[in-house]
Image (cartoon, rainbow, N blue to C red):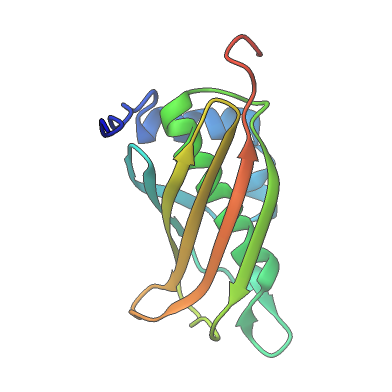
Length: 150
């Protein structure tokens, strides 16, 4: 059985960051800055800057902030390979919160497990900057638009 070849990137990290700024300008008002630190076929690493706005009562980083980073990370990894596809949408996302995050930047390590013609599946490991221990783990599926959809 022949091994499937690794796809090539359709967009660079800078091109993808510019595209996200174009199609989701509100993300800067709603969430702390999130940067693409690494983008390669089927993987990405993102950083969400720490901001007191994402703390929940008790002083820990909120679940919605971690969920947002996981979902956004999957979207970035997928679009990195398939290119600009505004109709790629989350169909499911499950997250397990493993331990209390530090009051520091959040890091997302994204790995795509499947990138088909209609579905993409991946996992995201979230870490607090400065700690080797995973704070959350997410798995998700995206529905991908047909190649001719805009």
